[in-house]
Image (cartoon, rainbow, N blue to C red):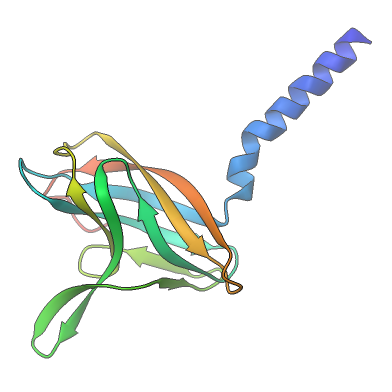
Length: 150
């Protein structure tokens, strides 16, 4: 009887520890943040997002920055410009890249320099078509300033 209870508790604990991954609405692949130099006020965060249902990336947070914005790089005439966007559409089942030269997260008002090899905690904020918001935590590796886009 006692061993049955113990097995049941162990099984429940195993299920609960796996639950956050199972509940994740978005697969987050290869998250990384570009390293910085001293006094650099901002940097970019990059990753590949694949939503299990239609969602929008509407924001993010990180303890290392005063605020975080969703940005895109786009041509305006002959000039490449960066601008903040309200949301990034994540169609169900389609991978959306956040990469240098395209969509990305800007971490603004950095509280410390970021060195290659460090980990940065990010909280991604999503919104479904009904306007309900959800959050997902990720750990992003800090890569060197010269890191390639992939």
